[in-house]
Image (cartoon, rainbow, N blue to C red; front, side, top):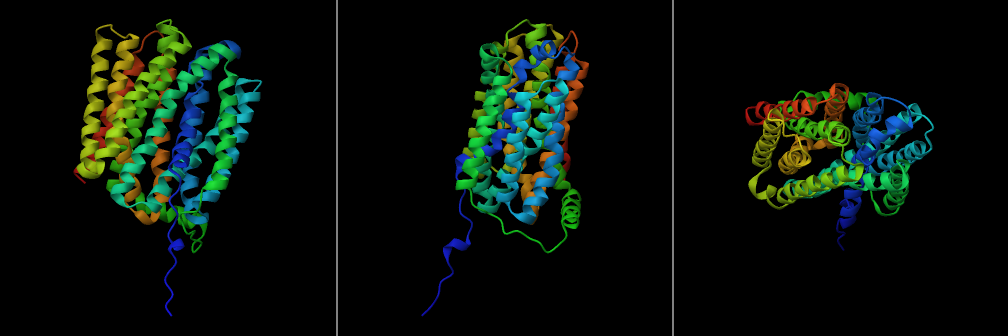
Length: 398
């Protein structure tokens, strides 16, 4: 009598809906309150540069925590690391709702970010755990769509919530979503990675990070993603101020224009999901970064001719979004596939670089903006050019 190896030994495929939600949770929380930022200056009687810290420190929290979640999930498993993060996210969201001062709000935002970033890291690592290379790139395109479409749509929701109920309403929504996501993951998400406890945690972190950082291809993929995302983070840091303060538009109008860019990004992601396996990841990145460069340089031309209007600002951002929709998911998959044994660590490092670049650029835009959109346009151009240069250096010529 023979005994077959049970099929259960292979990791179960996770529900795609859960991967989409956990990937989009942190980025959505980043953006849902953006239309409220100019109004917060009056609520807390402070300057725009101080209110901007609710965005900048959120990105810092996302960046720093990803360095922990990646190696932690390699060691204890994806599911426990994710559940810990979601609990922190709910606590941070509640703190934001109740914040009596701007300092308390900033602290709540940091805790919200530390918890929310667990979904970003885990979604990438789980996909790498259970899917083959070609299929993984397509699945990752759908999940990455959530990571950008959700935050692009969030200002639309946030703008209307702000107009109807006040700025705290967006954070109340995030508390509800966080609790529901935590319950769904606890009940429906199974472990996809066999934990490794052969080495001490700090030694595992250092050895895994060192191995990845020593590979030029990892830098090429990771920084292509980071600086292409940096175009987006520069935009979300400066666009609310430009639209509401300089162009005298409403928070809800800003949100509607943002929805246009979100739908275009979805188109780029859809194309990436459909044809990446056939065309190849590196070629998709080349096409996508070229389109993004066209978008930022067109915006620069409009700015130099005094034509910064909602249609030109968001029209050019839509071109960038379409290109990023093609290049970012393929870049993420390239980064986590450089060393499959360290997919969690690679996801964390890639995410760290993405958020660190985003935090630096968003702070710079918020600090420099005054009576012109020039700093916003300049940072978008610099970031897009840097993305293409890193890809050329690290991957195409590496």
